[in-house]
Image (tube, rainbow, N blue to C red; front, side, top):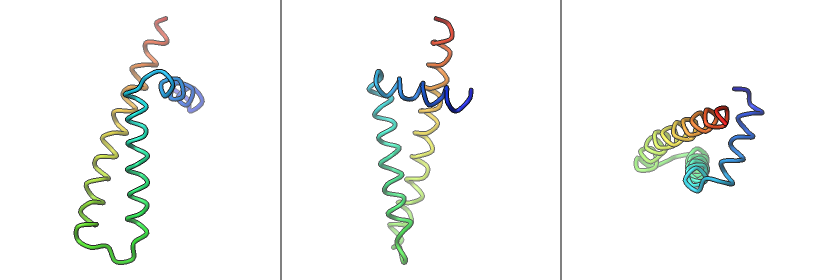
Length: 79
């Protein structure tokens, strides 16, 4: 699936699927916090741990987003 098609499906799901929209917003909030943590010159142990945990959570959400996109693309092709 090319990027243009994927982006069109993503935009459509953002409009139509509240759970998908929630996943994307969660992914964005993880990204924002990770950027904040990355900008720290001397992060504490807690902040370092938070970064590791957030990276794992962000990846899990990204996988779910991609899975929903693939599932939706198959449904669209069937119609």
